[in-house]
View 1 (tube, one colour):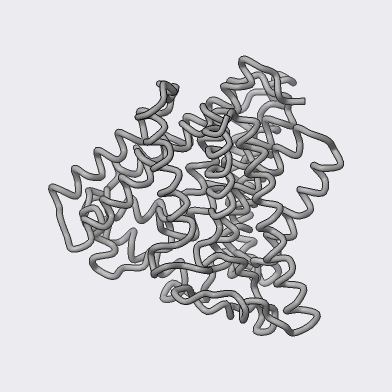
View 2 (cartoon, helix red, strand yellow):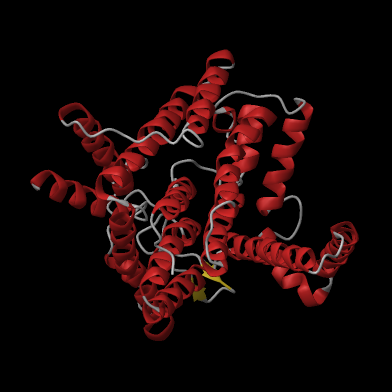
Length: 402
């Protein structure tokens, strides 16, 4: 009983600390979220050693993070650089250790309890950026002046030169948005399981938290997820009407082409610039992406070495291009297998349309958010993926979806 109580406390501390990547840090890289993750890993390893409780192996999923880690470490050994050791430590910390610690936590406490703990943590954490935005906008008062942020970026990012973006306890608004899309999305799903009133309130909190970050990455992630879900709905509709899909796909391609042209027009130019985050190819994210793609192309999309981007001080601001740059095309494919397997698991699970679409939305936005930042230090998408896969497995045995 005491052991389970302590495990619950460790779990709640872990979920509560996931967005604390800037405030109260012990060093530039030792954040509260890292300390909580280490505590979770230690408690999981201790539990495996001193108790009879074991991790249930998910053969459909668990193999791929291990394979990806082995491949990344192998590339690092074959193509070493000054950043290889640091990157290797991060990979081992995240994919085998943290991944299986979360799996152990889900086995020990149960999926519903873990969803509940994350729900409570998100509601508590989300109050900070909401209060921060309201205080900044209406009172011209910044609560960040009273939050200890010795190693984090200064919380001074603005929108249109006068609206303050919310940082919460994160290092930057983009990280807070990534946390909200993933862990906040899971909180919305848990609320959906309980009651319509709780679901509506949680969705409002989730939406307002995202808005206060003014994150272009979050906006792009929502647009991508909404587009893919709309395409899925239309394909299912065509299938039910027994209409051939090839002409529809061709029409969709033509619409996509004209949509891209429209983004260049002045009416949609603001949205395009917001998502791209620059005025041209020489600055902002598009400039970073162009450099990464060019260097990867020059190397025939072969690995340049684990940590090569960091060793050469190359800013990429895109997780997928970072993987392509460091680990090559094979590394990118190995990384994408994990969310693809989860996506397929959702499709092959008998869920209600609402539940299925909600889980797909969380998964797609979580991984699309990685288009705007390039670091494995904040594993929100991976954690959301683990939870979603467990939800699909749990639903096949016990009906938890309304």
